[in-house]
Length: 175
Image (tube, rainbow, N blue to C red):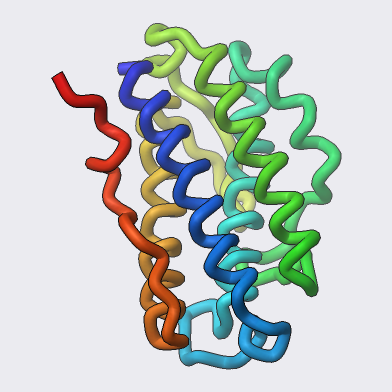
């Protein structure tokens, strides 16, 4: 199972790099323009993916096999809401994104298959406690990013930008 998460972590980083390259082609006004998206703008959606990752990585840091490798997530303040804009410009958002992607790769590298089957107990944004299989929470974590990157590729397409190939298939090795 760990091999699948390694692939997802690599895909996550690869796609985030593509997304930020596309975003860099837009000016500040275009990045902040209300495009009718769930998180309003391109920058708002980029912020949301960072916010979501910070929230989940802080939860994951409570897992016994993740504590050490995720110490770096503590430099990020805990977001108060899912639509919080932690970064007002693309550059600082991208710097955070890169640090988070490095933490994600390190986290997956350190995990054992056994750790993926153990439960993780955490509190959601409303303070409600939950306990779920760590591996399934990781699957949700990666799926969440993919969902919002799909929204971003649509927003880029509407702005006349092509992000290129976005399929996971591009990273699956051939036999």
